[in-house]
Image 1 (cartoon, rainbow, N blue to C red):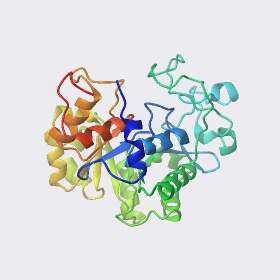
Image 2: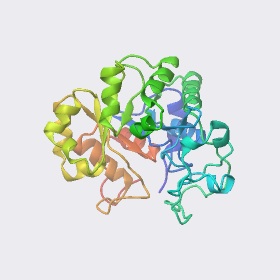
Image 3: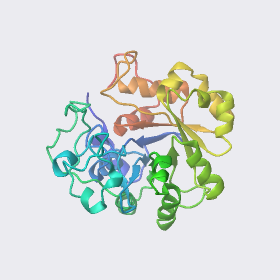
Image 4: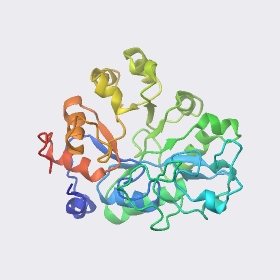
Length: 325
């Protein structure tokens, strides 16, 4: 499939928006379809491909530093088994929180792999072909803010707190630490270019009511969180959050979910759209994205391929089945 990213890159970097309306493209773990997830290289490429926001998932190290990882474990995307073969816990996992930042910086990031060592997406960046580091959250912020200065764009960040309740039980308060870093880098107030997302409602409520933040909060919703997918559930979410990030299958199954969320003033940013993991009812990622953005009326999308979402929003129409670019 021909990609549009390089074709639109120069226009985007001049700060000329090709997208219509207020719908946004979120670079899921960066541009994970092209480069290993949660690396500075992946974040930079998502920026260049036109993402409006870029997502870092956050976990903590033993010395209390936020690093960008999707899991609280290290083995799925790094060579930790080779570098620290004796540091796994009895359950067989290498936990990020058991390692200092200096130790984690010794690791090499690769494409996400299964327990067998085979990549989840075989057509993506070759496993171990190059060396990538695990970035800190601060490094990610400084990259995006630096690019904003040099390009004139205003790309936002969309951090996700991973298992804050578990971290709290380990003695680490992710919520207050997050607000401290965001304030240090100027992310303050309801119009800041940041969304804070989490699956755990208690963490979001703590951010809103105990810590008093007025930053935009997003309740993530998995396909099995049935109580959150009802009108009553959405009404409750609206008491502490500005938006919801549902598994896309929730909307596919019940398209009225979007109108219910909008009824309570919540925006809707579903996840995750991938060209190499396409539902059978769609002929292309363009078609799937078009269905969600224009038929279902969602307000933004999390995608591993931000250039394709940029193209769909620019065209403003659903490609005919079998007639994608």
